[in-house]
Length: 262
Ligand SMILES: [Zn+2]
Ligand SMILES: [Zn+2]
Image (cartoon, rainbow, N blue to C red; front, side, top):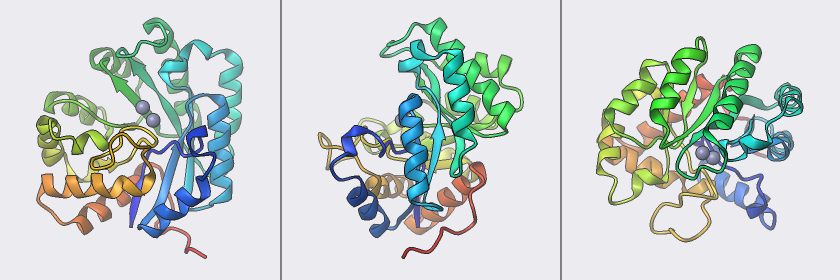
């Protein structure tokens, strides 16, 4: 069994065939999917989706750095309320993105800090998005993140950057970029990372692995990330499936075995 630890299947890109996509993932052995919010609306729809598939789909609620300008005190109230719903296992995704810069850096940092405080208040892990913002992210976590743990989702970086995240107690989640031919450095990091700190994800509908690039990504394709991770680490696919599913269960405090499928 595999777990896709990060897939936005609640978004409009899946409105026409959401249940079929989810069923295809289950049929392909992806027994669990974690669905992170991007802003309040997609956090709410993630919670609603988790309620439809108890024990198999889990939700995270949060505001993405792209949407940080929309983060207000009301947003925090909404997220706090949503986070107490069944099936919610994390705050996220949140973080910093200095690549697309869709919100000013200072606004992104303020939104992230508010969500870090929320994870501490609610004792939940946090799902971090970190793009071209590594130094600020690590500094901010060192200053404001005491006691907070979670995952660097779609980790992209070198061994020193991975070390920074691991030293702060975070997990590393590998996504489609692990499968891209040019990313040899990332595969070296994936080969080296401690076995008890690695996760896999698709970040659907984005970051589609080859040979499907150019098409919408979906959770069943997490198997291609698992396969690449197995090759990089020179272990079996079964081993990768086992450890990444167990690591996700540990981090997000999921039940040990998924609910049996009807
Ligand atoms: Zn992200
Ligand atoms: Zn995402």
